[in-house]
Image 1 (cartoon, rainbow, N blue to C red):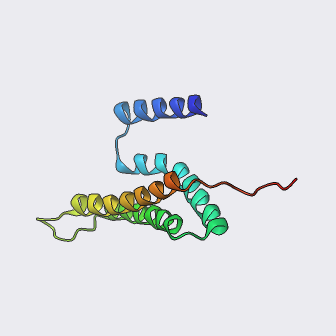
Image 2 (cartoon, helix red, strand yellow; image 1 turned 180 degrees about the horizontal axis):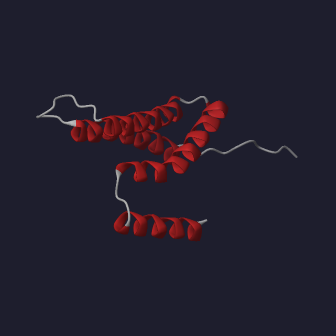
Length: 117
């Protein structure tokens, strides 16, 4: 898995550095990881029903909203807080929510179902 991630990272880096550095390329590159993490959060929430797990899932949704903000050019103010600043603020909120969820997982590892003998 680590080798596959390294190959993907190198291919993405070469593509962005030499061919196309548009934001849509970054979004397309992030989509598989976001889907995987979203499924992991959803399955974990289904079995745990803990609020911090849901917070992580909401954080992922907020990062998706941030990507839409950037792509659509939405801004809170055209001069003082343009679409790029709005994107980064929204992204920071989403990443903070994911961080809070990660802290929960570190402090409360999932033990899974126990097998009775």
